[in-house]
Image 1: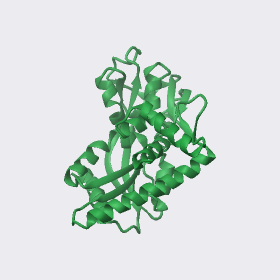
Image 2: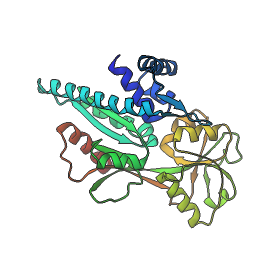
Image 3: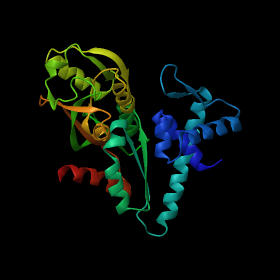
Length: 297
């Protein structure tokens, strides 16, 4: 059994997507499936099951145990690498960062590449999760830094603002709105919408803005994953309101039409969060300051 196999399994659980886990580890989806089957054959236990009606997976009871122990092994392996690298005086080691899908997949990559170019011996352990879990993992010390949208002040938590993003309306290229460059919120009344799930901050903000303009939309589906929302809009389920940075590739490739929302309210703040009493190792401090400086510049 290889460390890489354990990492692929943990990434699959964290991201709840074979395609995203494959992309993150530079392998095919079939390779991810094969590695899971190999683990299940070895331990003679089913570790994952698919969620009926959704393209997601969840852990079985045996999988919960295996996932927890895999995390411990990967943490110990990272610590081993960090300790050995430290012997030769390099700035190296692992920065543990948790983030939400839309930020981690579409806003952090250029910042991560910049960081890695400065510290090639370093490693960023990036986990994807819901905002509530990101904040929980920061507070309990599971991860050192969190990056979330609409960060809320909380006792014991420090927030470092990053650059904000605009929320935009997306629709299929053949939709009647597709040729518009801007639209007013009142024009969305009664339209079919694909929405984030209710506990996700972007959904809460969207609901609040729509309510302030006395606009009701018709919910046709709810998802917790930005990629699923985009694909649902692409095939014609309905409209959606999403961060602009998350749909720039689809806009460029003409997979989705992106329309600016006219009102000034449609801003999505993003921030790095960490425990106020946390003492950072040198490498993590470099990463934290990079995000702070990228906002102030």
